[in-house]
Image (cartoon, rainbow, N blue to C red; front, top):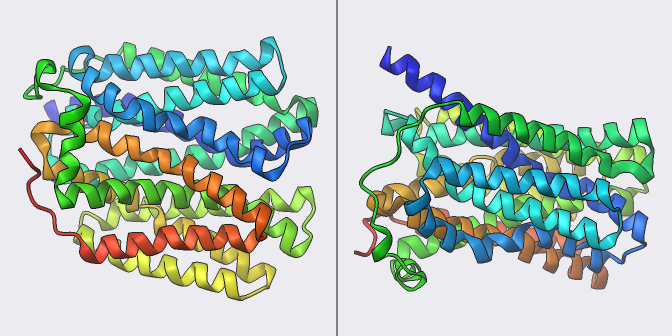
Length: 391
C-alpha cells in the first residue's frame, strides 16, 4: 500500500514536468513575434534569452530559500507566476507585454526547475531509480515540448496568425490544473537539508571549487544550450537552406521534439540497465556525428534526420548530469539544485550567440555554435569522475 501511495503521489509531481516544457514554445513563437513586430534575427534572439536569463539570477537564491519555504510550496509559487504571465498578452498585446510574458514564463520556469526535481526525491522511495525517475520527468517535459508548438499552431489555425498569442491562456489553464492537483496531494516535507542560516550565495558558489561539480555545472549550461539552440534554428535552417514554406518548416521542430521524446522514453528504460556514464558517452558521440553530417551534407531529408538525431541522442543528458550532481552531494540537494538550474541560463546565452552567428555568418554559423557546445559535453562525458563534493 505504501508503494502504491508513493506512485500516486508521484503523478502530480511528474505532471509538473509538463508545465516545465512550456518554455520550449519560444522556438516556434519567436517566428510569429518576429513577423508581428518586424524584428531582426538578433532582436528575435532575445526572446529565448528573456525566458532563460532568469535561471542565472534565480537558481541559487531560490535553491537557498527553498529550505525555508519547502519544495512543494516553491513549486506552487512558480506555477502562480506562470499563470500570471500567460494572462498578460490578452490584456495588452505589443512588443513590451510579449517580452514581459516571456520573462514571467522564464521566472516561473526557473523556480519550477529548481524545486520540482528535488521534490521528486520526496516521493521516490527507491533512490536507485532517481536517474530513471528524472528521465521519466524529462519524457513528460519532452512530450510537452512536442505538444506546445501544436497549441501555438492550433491558436493560429482558429484565430489567425495575428492571434497566435491565444495559445498563452491555454497553457495557463493547464498550469492551473497542475496547481490544483498538487495542492490537493499531501507530500511529506523534506528532512535532512542544510539549515537556512548556513546558506549564502558565496558558499553555494564555493561548491564549484570541486572539479566534478564544476564540470557538471558547465555540462548543464551547454546541454540546455544545445536543446534551445536546435529548437531555435531547426525551422530557420530548413527555410534558409532549402526554401521550405511556412507550412513545411513547422515540421522541423516537431521532428526534433518527437525524437527527443522517444529518446527520453528509451533512456528512462535503458538507464535502469546501463551505467549512466556509458550511456552518456555513447549518446554524446552520436550527437557530434549528427551535427557534423548536418553541417557537411546539404540535403533536406538528411538534414531533418540529423535534427531529429540531435534531439534523440541528447535527450537523456540533462537527467544524467543533474542526477550525478545530486548523488555527489545529497546532503546539499537544494543548493546543488539551485546551482545546476542556474546553469540553465546557458539556453539564453547560447541562443544569443547563435542569433549573432546567423546574422553575421549565416545559418551554418548557428549550427557550428551548437556543435561547440556538444564538443564540451563530449569532454565532460570522458573527463568526469563522480566523487563527494566539497564540505
